[in-house]
Length: 348
Ligand code: GTQ
Image 1 (tube, rainbow, N blue to C red):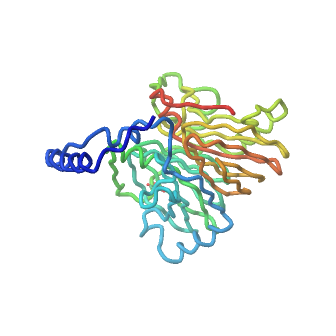
Image 2: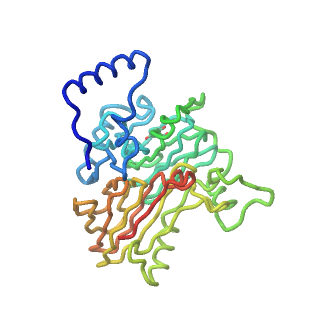
Image 3: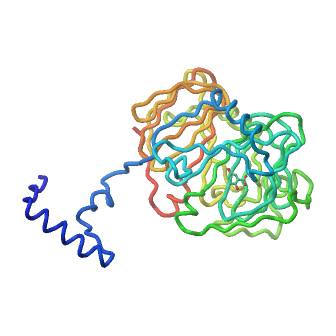
């Protein structure tokens, strides 16, 4: 039973008391207990859809207003409407669309925030991570783990757009942000392209390499063609009723997520397949790389197609239906929640 409402006298006495203790930087728990210890998650992040077909022109417009050099990173932040002003797509993650035009460079820097890129549009760009370049192809998943030097460039003749995902809100929460700029805006290649994938990404690792469990992946590009081939191969089998066919990107040397704060998944839904509803505590960003269909998050339903991006907030049920064979990429803070024992999932 809810407690009876206090009398006006009692309310006045309490308010005056709150003022008195406020002078000592104290505040009563009982006024906020239910919000602090909620019976279940009530995320401020909202289920939101960003349609690439509507965003593309707006992103290219930024290319006429500011250079990559001047901006340092020419990015339009995808800001969750429930978290305006906070540069967040979910409570714990940041996402943005980065544009790099032919001939431009985004100068080398490093920071304690971990980043991922998912290449969406255009060809001819590269990212360099700690002295090794990788050519960015559509659907490639590229990571720049915490404190690795990285710069981007476009050697081709088309604008290139990719999705950035960073743990900026997590690092801000911990007040653990550091960054520095390099004095060379483009890193000198130290190793040939493909070196990391050859050493760490072919079911082998260097003989004396002994990573610690939380070390980030030395494989920094997960080529789309490999991901796609794996999903297509397993799609010959029986789909999971909640996932269809879904694989988790890992640090191949440890089996952990590629970076300690961000987990990423790739999912294949055959044409006509509909998933059963599923909810989990990790608010998730989903990107459609191929195909299309319908997505239901909580009580909202949208159609989605290639390069559309949507958010599934914590503990809201997600249901997907593919109208064409669909390939989805997603990322979340799941590794953090799992390391801290917080992660929950419910198959409905
Ligand atoms: O490419 O290094 O979207 O440092 C935000 C911060 C991208 C990057 C972002 C960054 C970067």
